[in-house]
Length: 300
Ligand code: CP
Image: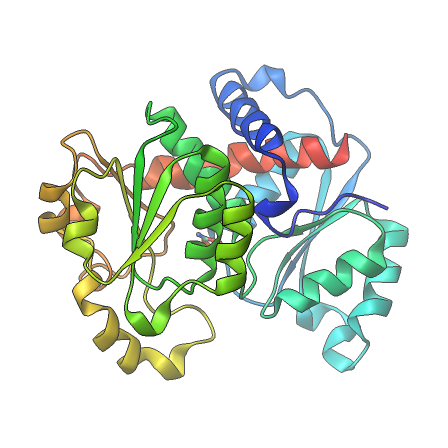
């Protein structure tokens, strides 16, 4: 049975550190990677669109000398009713790992149960753990260490917020989630974070949250598949925009992160997005490096 990566809670704190350190070392010196995926095939399965996840995984697999197969739901008999368990059982006979971007987290759990090979969460409705690995790699790369103050402003019930909460617990930094009372992080995620030793503050005051922050982070207000909620969420989240006022309240050394794609003028102001403090495109690049570290870790 392969070891899957559906959430950061499946890693120990030591493994989380090890992945960040390996990704940072490999970014500095790509010759360290070798050919850990030689002769190995990895499916990249997408129920939703992607730019960064698709490109970073496909390039990472190629650079580690493996073979990537990009599949959408319409490429498979899933589109004609074959169930996920049988699909997983078949995939496990041909492949060495599956990365899945899915609508429902249960689909990944079903694949992991049936395939018998590592399944990696490339985004589900519940978590986005590969993104959070790149985010904490970027924080570490910028010299922001344990004990720092991480502020997420936006939808506290989102997959990104959930994974940042668990990542902060592993990284041993305080995380504040500034979010409307209707969009609180899910209780089960807060329970897991507490078990991992995390310190999470939830507030409805984004400006107060930003005071002395080391990291300011936001994400789009309307996630893929939530388009029918656009007007309601725009209204709810307007007071949570990452902008110059939040930047002014944060430490002078604070960095701005966004997992992309961005809707400038909504969750982030143009000025904050283009600020010299923004590390958004380093963060996007770091998807490639952590993906390599993760594939090496799961497939070695
Ligand atoms: N941040 C992120 O997951 O980007 P994509 O949706 O483009 O993969």
